[in-house]
Image (cartoon, rainbow, N blue to C red):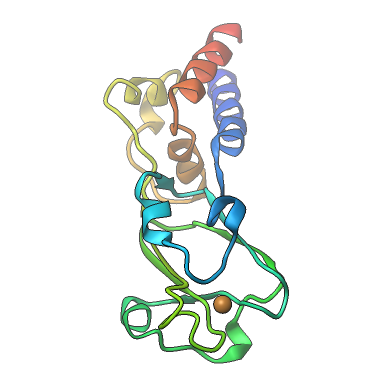
Length: 171
Ligand SMILES: [Cu+2]
């Protein structure tokens, strides 16, 4: 019983890694002025564990993670907290609204270089839930801690679920 639980857990932990997505902000335009980032974000679903990648020529732009008020006003945090590599990757670690702006000149206020996204907690449909308790009914109750986070994070797609089922059956 215990070993089967471990196998399931390892399979699920593995799947959580392969199912996270990287989003290139602005796609081939990258992170720049005069681009409608809200339109870009509109048809996308962001989940905890996914990554945003901001691409731009070094020195031309930067990236600040800000709060809603700073986003609205385009107010810039201290330069020391800016991301400036030109290939800045941000892991979406928590659900909720996330705001990003460029802090160079008037790029945010005039150039519209600002992005708001809503990060979803990882979806877990009722049809998926029974698999969580497979082989470990006493441990399936909601728990805190990173292990539980990884388990939940795995159920991002039908593919992941299908693979998890495969692992369970195979072992
Ligand atoms: Cu800029």
